[in-house]
Every structure is written in structure tokens, then in C-alpha cells.
Image (cartoon, rainbow, N blue to C red):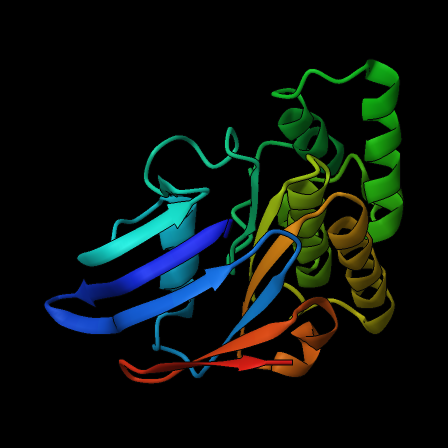
Length: 217
């Protein structure tokens, strides 16, 4: 059963269609790259899956349930936005602790997850820093760590590696691959540079101005 299904999906802004008749599926444990230039609807597709927007025509479902039903966090979705969407009043560590608070996991396991993500993202020495004093690469690393720490079953990533240095990018790619194998996590990543996403995907959804095609890898 597909975890995500787009059925003839159209999305318009100011009356102009950005997405037109998109039909595609993403099965459990699969990874899909949304590839195309700016303005062809990559972010819109991610927001449709997260239930943050609704299609003008067609249907988007997650596990055969309309994507607009329920909160992304309660449906096991982790998302990284292009603008990172960090909370300015929270330190790095509090970001990670806060999102874990919604899950009923033992305190010791929560502490282990936090330390792992701090190490993975290179933020262990900046655990008390707030977003305003972090560099772009550290902000993006925090956004990725926050999405991964809850062990989501579905990762929605919007240009997730743009600002990361090579070593941290490699660490996150290895972690996402591990999650795909161990936790059966599905990955949906939007990018203009598919080379960055190739290690974590199985197929590419090429998007143009109102067009789309799927390429199997």
C-alpha cells in the first residue's frame, strides 16, 4: 500500500496552475526526489503531503487518508523547510527536547537521542545557543536534527543540504539511509541539485511548468 498517493493533483496560485494533473505514488521505505527549477511546485507538493495546503483538484492521501486530516506530528511526519522554521526563543538543545516531549519515551532514551543528534549535526558545543547566533549551516543542521530525532516514518525535506559542509552532509545522508533500512522511513526531498539527493532516493519526479514525469533509478 503506498504511503503517499497523488491522484490527478492540481494546485493554483492567483488562478494560475503551478501543478497540473500530478499522479504519483511513494511506497513505504522508498525515497523520491522532486527535481526542477524554482516555481514549478516542489515546495507546494511537500506542503500538500504535510497537509499545510489543500489541492484545488485531485486528491493527496497518506496511508489512504486525506493529507489535510490530522497534525503532521501525530502522523509521524518530519519536515525541514527552506527557511528552517526554527523557534527564536529556544536554544539548540531545547529545540530537540521540545519535539521529543510529545512522544512517550524514557528519559534516558531521550537524552541519548539528543546527544546523538547534537554530535551528528556538529552542534554539541552550541547546545545552549539560540538560532539568531547560529550560522546558516548550523541552522540547517538543527532543522534536520529536529526532524530526525522523533524517528518519523515520513521525511519531507525542502532543499535540506544547501548550506551544510561536506562532512555534516555526509553524516546526515548516512543517517537517513540507516533510517530507511532500520525504521522503514520514506523520504520525499525537493531540490534543484539532484546529485545531493541521489544517495537517499529511488526515483525522481521531474517537474516542469505544469508538467511531470517519473524516472526510476
